[in-house]
Image 1 (tube, helix red, strand yellow):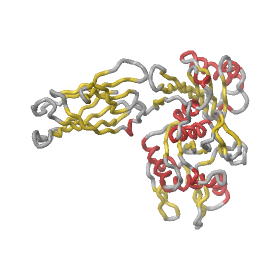
Image 2 (image 1 turned 120 degrees about the vertical axis):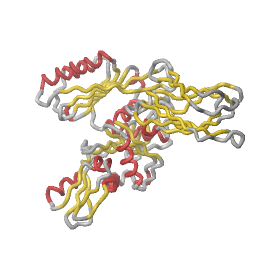
Image 3 (image 1 turned 90 degrees about the vertical axis):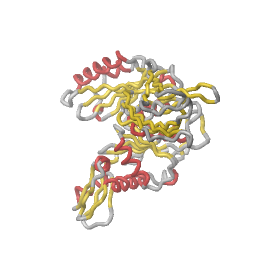
Image 4 (image 1 turned 180 degrees about the vertical axis):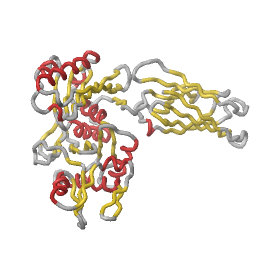
Length: 426
């Protein structure tokens, strides 16, 4: 089970061997021969903590071969040639990269970089051993997902499933695999970059739903790099206290180069009061490895749940239907579906009239809402003699588009070509 944390400047890779023989809540780790409760993360310094692999390729002038990662950065300083960086952003825009008069598609170069990264994992992992993979990025949108999915498809690994997700989703997967006590209250993630941006993401949940629904609420603050030592400590403690007054947390995770330097003192003492506090730089790649496991072979004992990402539908969309003379609720779109992946097409027989109703049920709390769909101008026919083709899509994160086509009722009541379109805020 492979987890890749991919940004535009670096990537990290963690993996978990998912043997069927499990001991307690651990997993057999073929790399160590023992039991590991957490994934292993690749390090450039053979077992140290140099987790970051620079996202870069280098091609020497007139040379046929490419180097990748830190080797590419080093070669660019010593040799004549071309360094290609920001590969993910270039692939998102489907750019062409011209080197010595030859054109390369950025998507192909992204796939080449990933292939070279996987070769760094050998002999611990061979590509054909990868059963599932999850790729995580700070923000996962449609263009990023498409670029990464296409690149991974070119690698020829054994992965039957490739998942693309945001850092928030990877944090959620990581937390699901920890002790239940850490999920007792909310969970707080603090990311502090070297540029001074401080992001607090509180992982919240609604236990009244089945399955349990999780989502993240994010606040962005700033502590400039010029603020150092005790002043930075006090500023961070004040910012964290403000966030925790809104949402309590039973576990706090700190990550980012801004936390380096050993300046956390008062803030650490405050955070540790009644909470468990962790610090690390490979949280997201580990979380992604857990995501791959949860999607491909969910361990027993891990409760069913849904995470609502920033781009996810936060309601169930369904319709009441009559089946075998019994009224039931039929879900068309599930909460948690990302808006750019939301598409469903189904046929229904209209009971009567020129209208039917969808039901929107929020899973984060709130009352259900009826969405009345009008079919003005529908031909008059006896009850239950009009078949409708209903297509639901989401052109934006908060907008539901419904297209209805009159399919008639066979040769008895031919279709008249009527099409209706309607949009709703969701």
